Length: 267
Ligand SMILES: [Zn+2]
Image (cartoon, rainbow, N blue to C red):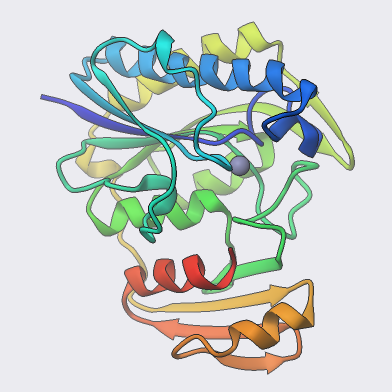
């Protein structure tokens, strides 16, 4: 019995380059959201090829009501919307899952790997945990690790994929695009789908327990806000210290406290 969790964002999907392409209600959103659905489906197909029995798919962008549910086979359940649970983009993951995939993920705030680089919102200029640049991928692959689930597959911009491999030894990646300033250089959408399906499957055909990572024993989180107004307001979160008018710092041994703090402070 193999269970796989798949979390899907849009800024690391093949093609997306402008914010308008990622926002519901725009004409320019229609093609990217179709590709988002197709890349999610390719990851699902890869998991099924490798013998997955159950898949929990998390629409994890903006309204979290982007993906067209009608294309998915019956082994898939789909989470839509936001509850406020700090597990956020991997909400309701638990130790019964064998692996987690991240599809369509993007470079972090302060990074140059994608014109749409950010971490959770555009409020942070950048965030580090123990000195490591913190992407949404790091935040939530650590969340999965905290309940004992290995991260085996990542697709998104190439720079994020490179950063991901430094953290997760068993990670299979598909870099669907490279960012150069305001431009993206993309694979053909068909090529992305083929590679995602292949690599997602290959990522499950490994010693999965060996792909688990050990989380750090302590978390030293530094958040630099673009606006000193945000930093001032958020310094009142319990346990927070202010380093300078743009910079807050938070220390804990418990990863859940990092997730909870970020949920309240950077959104
Ligand atoms: Zn997003």
